[in-house]
Amino acid sequence: MTSAPQTEELHRTLLDHIPHYAVILHNDEVHSMDFVVDSLLKSVPGLTQPEAIDIMLETHEKGKGVVIVCPLEQAEHYRDRIQSFTLGCSIEPT
Image 1 (cartoon, rainbow, N blue to C red):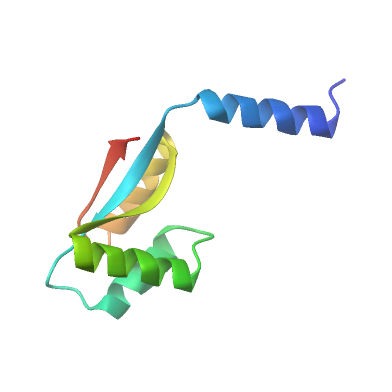
Image 2 (tube, one colour):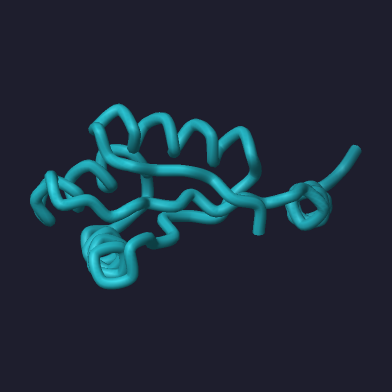
């Protein structure tokens, strides 16, 4: 039987070998900054308000910003959730 620490180590090792993708938020001139922050918080569990504000500001200033980096299936899920708020979003391999 595998112990909990061994299971966690195996899980981390597997995650290290799975390709990761960046979820990219695209700037627009339609939505308010507050709307973007609220949408990010509703779309990505675990994202804090200061993190969402930083992402929104990066996107506003640079034209796009990285929301999260994760495996493809999760990235597709987060992209779809963000797009459901009519925000521009895509995914790119890292």
